[in-house]
Image 1: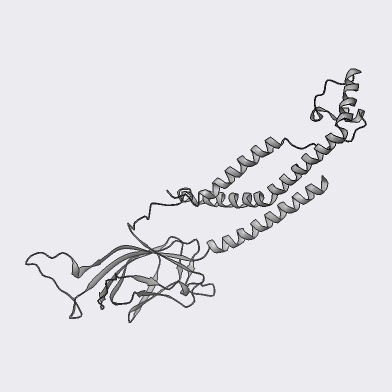
Image 2: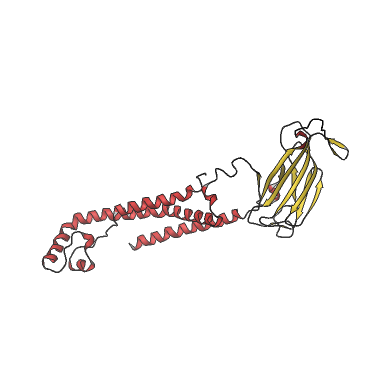
Amino acid sequence: MKKSIQNLVTIVTIVAGIVAVLSYIYQIKSNNPKLEILEITNENLTSLPRVKNLESNFYYKDSLITNLWKLNATIRNTGSKTIIGTGTSKNLIGDYLTFKLNEGFKLIDFNISENDFPYSMNRINNDVIFSFVQWRENEKIDVTVYAEQITSNNRKLEIMLNEREIIDGVIDYKKLNQPNENSNQIAINYLPKPLQEIFYWVGLVFFGLIFLVLPFGFYIELSKYYSFKKWKKKYGIQFKNKVNELYNNGEIKKIYNVEEASIDVWDKIDVPYPDIPTNPIGIMIFAMFTVFILFAIPLLWMIKI
């Protein structure tokens, strides 16, 4: 029995170590810098519905623009880590981020209408160089871009960032009112973030316990069960006779099965004490209920609403 407890402690220690390593990896991964480019509006100004007898033309530096696009977007730090643009602790590869347009568009104007932090900006040909000291969590900039489409393809205007300019950076592109943006979300997303993390680790730890400890527990109980069957076959009749003898002498109360015998009874009879298993039916029900509950937790990451 002592050896079984030692083995159980060893397995639990291994599981705890695995969870600790995964927790460390998860924390590192979740702390990666992350920016979100949310497209608010994107329209071709030269293809707007025309009114009879009303004409308009767009010019830029005395040049006629025949295919003018306007894009409004919000760019926000959605990660949990501050993006540092200068100094020895910066997490930019260079000293700035570069805003680009997709192929087939020529930049006319790039304007930041609102900002939550100080910055500097320079334009180099079709790119915009964006410099800052710190871009903290949830801080944003609102940008308006005017561009001329210089090719005949049907692609819309896009504003892009190179995520590789940020060390371990991630750039998410989204659109306001994008189809299915708020539908088909996994169930866990409807819970507060602290609860999401709690459920994540509870599920992870208990899955480890299920796959490592639970089979070990079943093995122990099954061993007890078959060992107890052998004991009853070898000592069952002897136990019954000894107990009946004590009962007939008025030394003990009536005992109907081995489980009812107290320590005092065992001290009075010359029969080896068996390793009595837990009720197998009780174990089965408890195990099935536990597995059901714990397997339901990961479903929160899979069920879409």
